[in-house]
Image (cartoon, rainbow, N blue to C red; front, side):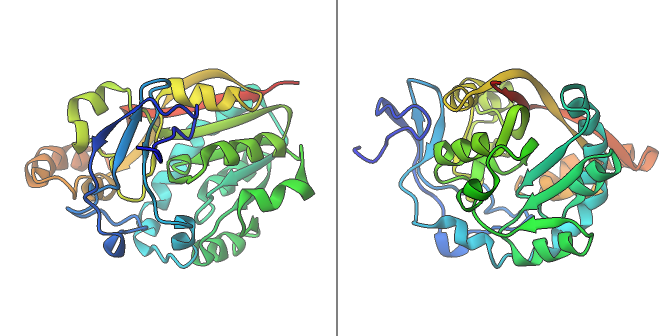
Length: 293
């Protein structure tokens, strides 16, 4: 169909993977998982670069994030901070000091930890509720779109991070171009997102946990490498995101599955032995790229 143009490589050589099952009026933009969480917009695969994307989409979908109040998210801030303590030493190997911009910073846990690691930190967050919490931690927050930052801040940041964000972008090429302009030569981009070409995605198919109504871009390592390359960002390594799993986090994540009760019964004794486990799940892509000097 004419509107199925890949947002990464601009090819129209595409096939439909899944028809639309989501009711836009019921679409959740919070951390709460339900049996409806796996319902999605119509999903299309590009046969040229392997990217998967949702098409067509409502206009200005991003505006739904501006008024989000997600108190469920606050239950997992300790886990998010623990993951940050694992990721920041990886970042330090490339950029030992400097200024970090966290795009989609939520309530600022990553930035708080990054500040403890010696970085100067700023965030970008559309949600007023989330950005107000971040500001209460004495962290500067830009409550705007990336393109609004570019002209005042070109080549300002040494590190730009996007954790669980890029899959929400309506126009990933435009957003990555902005990121490249905001990044200093030699700077580092770190992206956490799902890998649609991973073994977990292939086995679970549409039951893969990344299939969610609010997710509209599904990257493979190939399509993410291509997107970065288009804007002078060279892929340097890909790792698996380190989840600091608590019982509450795992239970919430399993809420969309019918076999939740069985899985929880199996997992609960593990969390009685230890309250927190570092979990490395195949398909949780932690992507690093540097900007050409």
